Length: 361
Ligand SMILES: [Zn+2]
Image (cartoon, rainbow, N blue to C red; front, side):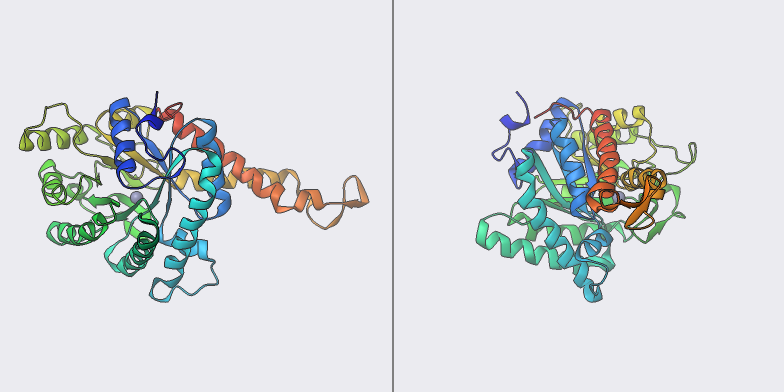
């Protein structure tokens, strides 16, 4: 008994009603799925390997900058060219390799602010072309983040894109209220308190506008969450606000008081406590974004390797065991990049355990 019983596609990239079924199952069983920001085939396989070994589903996402990096830093990003091509390349790669791991994978794109909409348009064009050939979009889901705009603009833009996406039965994540901190060049370190804690009324406006189009959407509503890792005590999280959102919407639509009507998303989870995660999950969080801590985890394995093997990697031949000793087995990228994969793998495992997403397939 598990997720595989509620999914039509049990392995590889899932789309459409399967994404909805996965999040609904997470609501029922009270767990959340980590969304791992990936920038390369190496970070993709580290996340897939950990999820497979923990018998968990996983969400893989590319940020705008991460997508451009996937294309290669040498590719021009004029008019979002590298970000579009890199996102498409990442999507095809993940679609090709995910079935080899035998777990369901949600393929998602992270924050798209207003100035990045050409990126979104490029990805949607690829989705529509893929849909014409295969009857499903290339990506499972995308995030539109117009949280810096007025609520009116934000919601109207989401309605416009969501209407288009719903024709492919594609999932949408939107943001209302602002996630603090800095990510991918967007700096929200100085926004007002009101923006850092979205009110239930504002969340209900989103629900009212999007739910007639399709049930396949989630909301990243701010509850004091902040991108990046901050010193303890700097951020006051209020996951109980998420419960207020659920209850307010339930009251408005006549649903049972304790129903988890909204799929909620936790941005800026790095540095949060286990209790904060559990409270957030109890209140309907189904997806937790993990970027900063994954970047650091990936580095640590490579960092330690380089520091420990320093005398074996200064030249192709010659190390403390002898001047003629070859060093190929130390400088082969499959050896030292793998060390980063191993430490990232561990961090993904920890996230899966913390969010109670282990053994749920
Ligand atoms: Zn975010």
